[in-house]
Image (cartoon, rainbow, N blue to C red; front, side):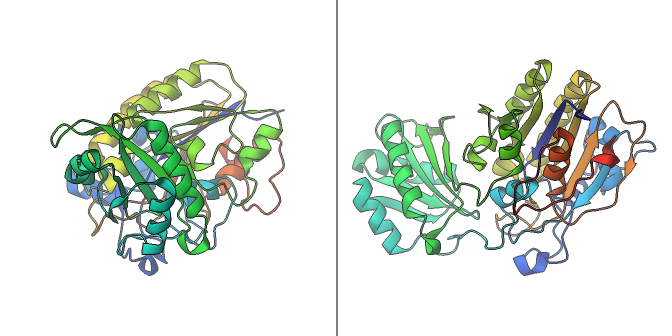
Length: 396
């Protein structure tokens, strides 16, 4: 018999809680996403996170730890060699990544890659540098529309992004070009984690805006994950937000596209009202995409507050046999230099109405305790080659 009928894992994308011992090797000395936000803001309104024990786990600024948190909490180190979205999520579900994905932040993509992309897509590439998506569209959108070129850019992540105007590029053609880019970047020396279609509308500067028709073309996980084991065991595996893209659909039985992190939480609340048996796995990307990469401390803080309000609603909806786990996949300290992710510990905050009390757990050195605990709960075997040990007995 399952200990919990339903488990909700919510990833607050990039909400790290302090530098790991090896962070300087990643260029991330002294980083602390959550702590530095609190220091800069002084206080933020997060009563539900406080109740669960987030401030007992990590606090700064004028915030104080709660006297009697109702959740169980610890910090998780990352065993994989990386600090990106896919590496973090894959590790949660049992995969340890030894070789990090390629990034082209400083140089843009190699001429050989661009030449092959232009030849196979039948379009000239403009851009080819690290940039903000909204800024490069504003700069090059008119040129793309008038010449029929396509805007290619990267970021601090391991990603190749292609912008296309939905009215002149055609959405299906944009997707076709991204599929070609995905195939090209399967070469080991060009191996990026994701290719992303970034459609937009508008005819001139000042009018351009990106649409929700974004599509991610991620690498498939390098092996089977806990999600595969759950699906093969006849359980529901519901992905919300980027989860389906991150795992390339592997092990997912149902997916929900989110327009924002607020929307993702609203979807999760509605899913919580339904009857299912298994896992609801949620990624809330706006912390990272809108605020972390743009080094916007106040925006990040306000996003945490928005999340907290919906967290309160979700806590009311949870059933007696539900387990909620809050975590992150890496850091993205908005007070740090550059625009890159940051190598950090991540929070693990768990709650169920079945718990008799909250309190601290012993820290773990891998995110994979999450997937291992889910697997044990539902009585499925961890796939061969995966890592992680369950802490389920500490969550009852």
